[in-house]
Amino acid sequence: MAVHRDEAWNTRHRSEGPLNRADRNFAELLQELRVVFTGVPILFGFLLTLSFSERFRSLDGFQHSLFVATLGCAALSATLVVAPVAAHRVTFQRNRKRELVRLGHRMVIAGLAAFALTLCCGVMLVLDIALGRVPAMIGAGVLVLVTIVLWVGIPMRLRHPSQADAKLPEPVRNLSDARPRGLSRRSGREVAGKLGAET
Image 1 (tube, helix red, strand yellow):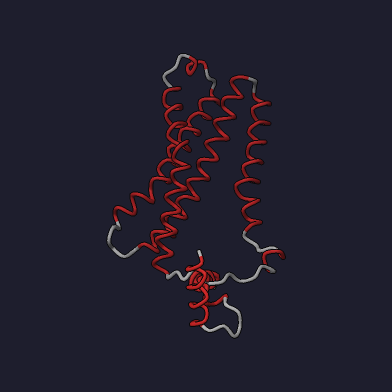
Image 2 (image 1 turned 90 degrees about the vertical axis):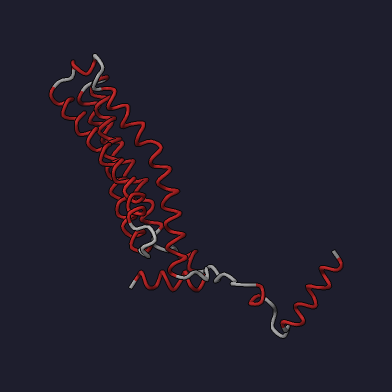
């Protein structure tokens, strides 16, 4: 039901059909993927090089397990954020853009969750090596809380329209809808022509 209401809103206020909306949504999805994919490979490459350093041999069992978890989450995150592009290649010219947008949306959500786990586990690993177990757990817990608030809490509040949004007037679709009563289309064109001649 909510999907149908959303499609009706797009058709009314944007003059946008379902296919045009799918194209726009997929373009927005690719823009968001560029932001996420900037950090994922860098972090993943850093974790790979860390395993060959001399300091890696001095890690205890917990730190080794935490490193493996961080590396796994980073690999999973990279795989998920690239998956919509691969799916687009597989379904190219198959008239599956709307289904592709829904699938890509779910993959990106899962990829962001894996990326958040990568950040938290990575911070905990570094703090555990540098400061100790207790400061590492505190730092990771704070990062988890901040991530939940910024990535989930605040956006969820934006999903529900406020009273101020409800009072906003509906957008004017074109200039002909905004002409005063009693002013015909012909009169409007004549006025516009005179203004153009004066300028």
